[in-house]
Image (cartoon, one colour):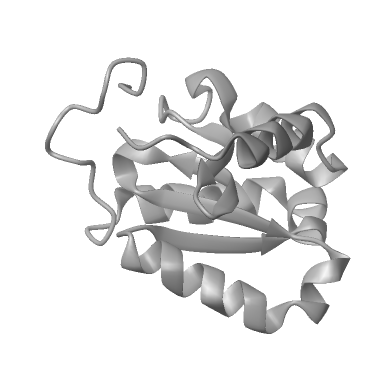
Length: 131
């Protein structure tokens, strides 16, 4: 297994400690298999990026975009292409969507997980990454 950049790991850990209000709210709904028993992880390094939330078995990345994302459109597009090239499906929500309509956001996530375009990986994941 390739070594993960220690700087990225440290940054992800710091981001987990200091989430935005929207991240904390969504994480509360997703963590510990609370959401329909799907396993999610928070602030996951997929070098050279850090994804907000990942359902690894389903290759699903959920990104929350705050106010600053309006200025990083090109970066976000490159990042999305990179993750898609790695086989991930990306869902993007704004912080305000999560804060104002968490149920609607969760419904979109559920529909994506249950869709035929996002299916669980057929092979078991490494120890510690299983559902």
